[in-house]
Length: 279
Ligand SMILES: [Zn+2]
View 1 (cartoon, rainbow, N blue to C red):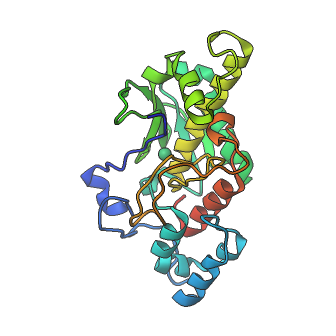
View 2: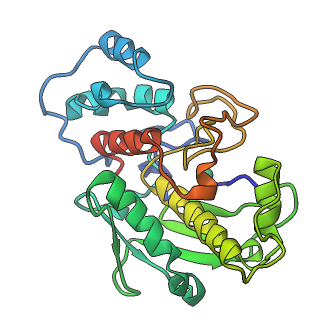
């Protein structure tokens, strides 16, 4: 109910540009890689190296291959690290996207800017830059989303748009419910939305939701690790997931969604999707 959801509904016009989760086509016809670059490693060598990395964590030994290797074996990397292209190719130009926030409420909150800075600081580059109404490649907006147990979402990313569910964002009872659902404990000052403690947790949670959705724009899909910003409670193995899971894997017993802290796994996966060419 409280987990983050995303949508893989891709408008048909764009379908050919994506290596998507739900369609069988995984062509990357527009991937900005130089296919003539360097040599190609063999599949068995790559597979062997992948197996030596921690689960879903593409540490440096799998991030040094040639562009041609990633171009040839992107499905192998996608499957083993739960990544795939999720943005249309025009979103990232020269390794950065430009973000505009139509919603005055979101803009004034500063949460989008904080989420952008979170990724920029972690990756050591300004992957997300502030745009304008006239000049942007990603929008972050509010939307009246569903609140029922089935099909509700806090935020989602689709093609080049992030949405935040305003029905949850504006419901002061929602965050304490999420907090209790995740931790089994009552959130500090849960009944006092104007208190400093509530406001701090609210800021961290909704900034983390936006950080998570921007992670999708970079090509990161979910993991079961609670201390990853890209965590989700459950997923089913398929073309885009290494394996199925039905609950979070708790690592150091913290939920990144409550702290807005990127894990080393989040960061390594984003570094991988850069070298593959997804941003
Ligand atoms: Zn998600």
